[in-house]
Length: 298
Image (cartoon, rainbow, N blue to C red; front, top):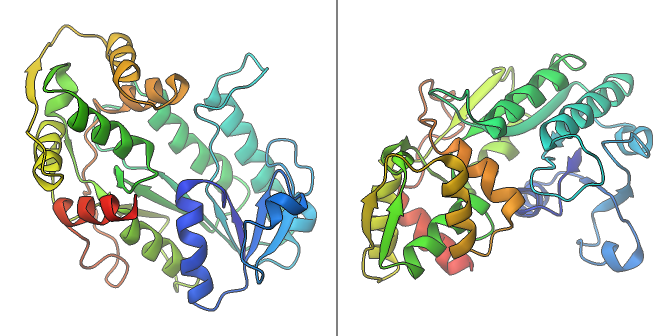
């Protein structure tokens, strides 16, 4: 099988799960120099290619029956004037076309879980559009839609962690009361791994953890688990998403280009409405257990 995005957080966590399950894994990377290649286990086949230009995709997809598409350009610098959403759509279209030509039957794509008004979130719209672009070429696309991923390398979780750790008082916009269903990285990777060979999977799989919480509740419970004093949260309803993203960038190390689209998406409720089929994510971790695992991982 082919794994794209293996150098990213989720892809890097998924790779050992796939290897442990006995799969032969080929990883598509933009730089397959010996120095970069040495970062992967010896049994992993590493090929060089680019999902945006299509260079190397034919070789990468040759003989592949299932592929993971874990690519997004959000937050990356680019000389192009197009937005990350435009780049993501073009990349998905290029990859989907190449996958169809190679006869790939299944593409598993990890996107975002949206359940409310996503009109103002380019991030969530882009994730949904990517799935559409892939499915235009490969009917067997499985769109895995996950809420906030709880793990030490997840940007959304890192924002939550840094805010809860560093600020005794927070001035927050309305999204602090938005409900979400955060899911542990271990539950995400376990589900993704099962879907490679899952018989007759649904077109969409919604993933969430055991708890539905507002962001206010998440920050309080994170502080409890991390043995920190819970921050005092003062909602400021008139704070715009743009001002909110500047505020988050000021107090967290997450790059600004990544913060803005993530913050825009916080106003949309991310709660599972259609549970996945039995056997895929039957007993997900609760928020506190997921945070403990993330803190140990860090």
